[in-house]
Image 1 (tube, helix red, strand yellow):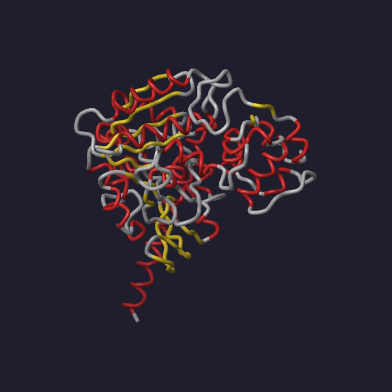
Image 2 (image 1 turned 90 degrees about the horizontal axis):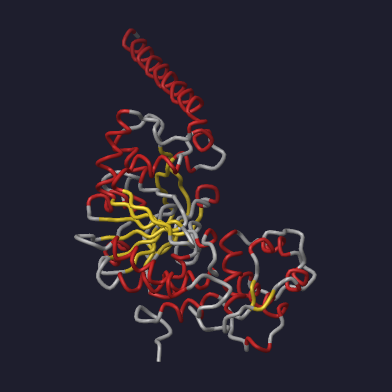
Length: 401
């Protein structure tokens, strides 16, 4: 019998147990409306009325994806476009749902509603094996399940969790669990708040017993031999992308990234720092931070570009295509059918990209933002120069007095 909780659990089983965040029901006896309302109750903490608008319940993109997984686990397909109709009543959405071809509660069953999961599992295993070749010590996995094609989110999640569980027996695996909302709210609870950078990390914590690192914005869920050591460090007291940061930790060791259905590669900002690009700056954000060590008033330095509505966010956008292009042989790509997969060797990437950025500091930015980005850098340089001159003038005046 599969174990249903803790580090030794079967990840596919636990993912389905926890994905609904509610009590079990008999799937064959439920109507679409009962399933939808029950799944929503697990997400919002109350049973909604059929007349309530789905858009009024405050579900973010992660919540909507959780809703799709929960309804699929109980035998119904909830198309993504229905989740995005803000004005549609719950009863109307339920009426448009259809039964799945797979047996509810049986994770990983091959059905006509998705791709051939046997082939998919084999392809994903090959990607993980490629990334773990040689002297790899750490593996960072970043995925965007909503961007997977021809496969239901719950099936993709079950296969992904199985692979993470397999390789984490010998290699430490990290998944981004960023909480950028802290920058605006100035409060975060890393023991409860879900990841805002993909649902996979949340399910790894539940299914495989992952630990969450201590940083109010750039936290990771880690599982494997070095998970405890990484989770014990208070990364908020360190720099954002420097040698002492978690990104510096990855850089100093044999680390590879696996990107599935996404080109979001935050590690590239360490290359920007090493190259001393003129546009990178950081701001200190204070607030209330709750983690495994308790609650405290503290803060952390965050990339200024991550501050919502800031000028940095508007003009310093990275061109993700440039990340892959500049990375050259350090980036290995393949098409899995359901998504594009990329394996990036962190050290090899930095060896190529840092010199390229020193030669052309703006090489990673979106081309249409080049002129405003350079203008902002020049404006700040003039302001800093004026500030230094004013300071020297004040000092000279004091000496005369």
